[in-house]
Structure formats: C-alpha cells, structure tokens
Image 1 (cartoon, rainbow, N blue to C red):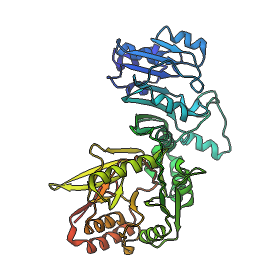
Image 2 (cartoon, rainbow, N blue to C red):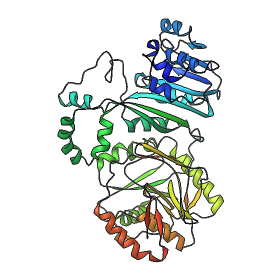
Image 3 (cartoon, helix red, strand yellow):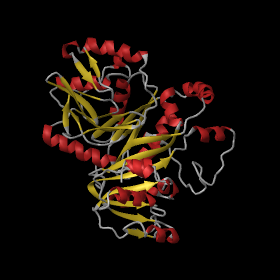
Image 4 (cartoon, rainbow, N blue to C red):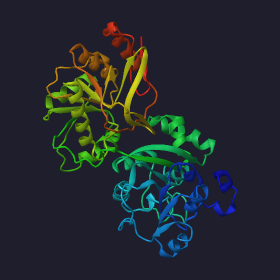
Length: 449
C-alpha cells in the first residue's frame, strides 16, 4: 500500500502523514516514540510488510492497543527508562509531536542517538510557537493553554525553527528542515506587522514564512564525533558586538560558555572595522588558538572538541595552518568548489566529503588563527571581505587556508547586503587586483572580477 492509498483511508486520517512521507523506504527497523495506538507504525508496516516497527507509549492502556499493530511496544517513561533495544540497530526513530511534551528532551535524544546505525536518522514533528495565531493572542495579553494545538496544556517546551536546530545540534545531530506545515495568516495582519519587522531588522518574506509555519518536520543525522570528550586545550574567542540581544541569544548561550568554562570570550564593542576588533582581541587573547566569529553564531555542545580535533587533523595534512574556517571555496579548472559543513539560518550546507580541504577564501562566520599569527586584516574594508582579505594575506605568506568540519549554527537575521558591502568590494578589488578573478563564500558565493 502506498502513501496515497493510506491517505484516502479514513482509518488513517488521524496520523501525521507529513511525518510518514519523510520516512525513507530503506528504513526497515523503526522506533516510534509516543506511538499512541500505533496507527503511524501500522501504516509504515502496510507500506512495507517486512518492516519491524517498535513503539514506546507512556500510557499502559494505550500501549496495549498499540501492541496489536506493532512488533513490540514498551510502556515506559522515556525520560526515566530505556527500551530494551540493542545499540546501533535502528534505521529511524520517529518523534511525532513528542519532544514538546518532555521535561528535558536533550538527554533523551542523546541516549536514543546511540540506538541508531551510523547512517540512521531521526524525524521530528514539532509545533511552532512563532505562529501568527500565538503572537496575536500574546499581543492581546491572552496566552492561554488549550486542549489541543500549539498551546496544548500538556506542552512543557515551546520551539521556533532556530531553537529546534539548537536542540538537535546539542543532542549530537546535524539538523535538516524537511518541510513546513503551514496555516496561513490574514493579509491585513502582515501589513500591520511589516513596520515592526523593519524596526527589528527582519526580512519580511522570510519572517512571514516562519509566522505561517504551524509545524516543522526536521531530520537529524548523527554527528560522528559528537561523543568526543572535550579537548583539554582552551580556546580564545573574539567577537565584535553590535547587537547585545543577538549576542546573548546566540554566541553567549552556547554550552561551551556555561559557568566554569575554560574558554574565554573577548567582546569588542564600538570597533570601527573587523580589523580593529581582530587586533584588539589578539592582543588580549590568553590561549594559543584564537577563533574570530560573528555574534549570531551558536556553537553546540561539544563544538570546541570537534573544532580542535579537526584543526589538528588539518595541521597533519597541510602543516602550519594560516586560517581555518567552516565554509570556504576554491577554484579548480575554472569551476568553483564549495567546502562547508554549517547550518546557515534554516538550511544546512553539507559539502564535507573531503574535509579538511584547502580553500582560496573562507566565509567570515568563523575564522581561526594561532595567537602568534602575523596575519592581519585591512581596516579600510570595514566589516566586509575581511575573510577573503586575511586568506589572501596567508597565501602571500605561504600559509594555507583550510575548511574544517566543525558544525555550528549561523543564526543570522539579515539577508540584504548593505551599501557598505559594495564600498568594501571596490576597496578589496583594488588591493587584490592581481588575484582576480576570485570567489568569496558569503554563504551565497560572490565572484569578484
């Protein structure tokens, strides 16, 4: 039985067909967390009878009904108990409207990750608290729990797309938004909301997309090194600050900066250029390896360990590294090759097959250099093209620029390039005329000729 036939059957109309649609055909052993009466699992077995579908259901009476449809069902509290499933044997784990009901979903996801095969996945269906209906009622001072829906009275956690991404990253998964289940809003509401979006610096059509999202379907693939113990080596982080709210919501909320952290964050406010911020930070840095990054970056749990591990791997391959980053490009035979592993806004850029890899230029979201580097940035460039600038300075000094695999989240609000970008471009072209044409990875590659 295919999905279309199932959707036409009234018996199955109560299940989440959008979540069902994203289960890979190759998934033969599946765990459904919060399986209820087992209808989703039953649909999966009807589509492929040889599948093994295991369920977990908190309520024992409902679990008994699910056992009539699934291969095995455990009546347990997933926050307190583990099902008797051999680690490394599952192809897929499903969380259909479950995560928002958990008190502490992070440890649950981390434990369940160990049950997956190396190429296994999780699929999550999660309601979006940013939906326009919630905002309407919040503005009316009318936040009320309901029997069902976005403000279901049993919801213990509330998520937007960005906080889902952070949760999955911290749990050891590379997140990918698979689809958005929409409930559109009234045009008059968005016309009225547009000035507020402009005031907050939000892109209108992009933000409207999130405001109309009722539910997200996310996929998570296990990060190979997510269980690595954090390296002993502490890091120095430099960040130029222009928005305190963005800084606090992203970089400073990264788990590696929790109380007791060995790492240091050097904030530079009122810098006239990225070059000035870099120079002030380098002078103050106490640790041998320095990471210069954006205020809207989120570094998930375990990131310093993965970063140091990948950086040392690059040193073994290429010798002394001039600059390292998480996204870069190189031109080969007149073709631009992108190397990256980074979550940019609501999409994951996964071009990591050959990492670590040499790059002509690196994106500025993350730039790492040794504390004793002699490389510097051009102050006249302001806050644009300084990544390409320092990479070309490294090339001139005979040092490689390298893309390494250290997945993190660029949670940027901005999509429109300012006039300052184009002014910096002209300065950059004059300085490096001998190196043109050149491609810079602004997470939307720019060819400079």
